[in-house]
Length: 115
Image (cartoon, rainbow, N blue to C red):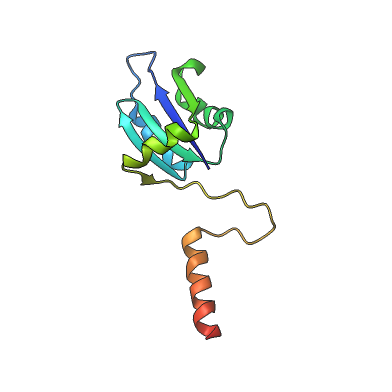
């Protein structure tokens, strides 16, 4: 899992940073606001994948800066309040693709029946 610092600088007056905030759960397993237009994101995606997925939100590609944090920088983010994202692990092993919550319930039920 990688930790990134995202910074959105609107280039036009009709833009707002809320569109990025609304989109973060879909590119992250966890995310934390750090200020106006600044977020920390934990994800298995790379910096270019993040930019591509959020590109539709911007008038110009240089409106979003994405910086991967090193271990020392990422360790400093432990004090933040992290919100749960909706990005699922990229499992390409041929298993069933169901939401994580449903899969947990199925595993629990099978475990109960096996006892």
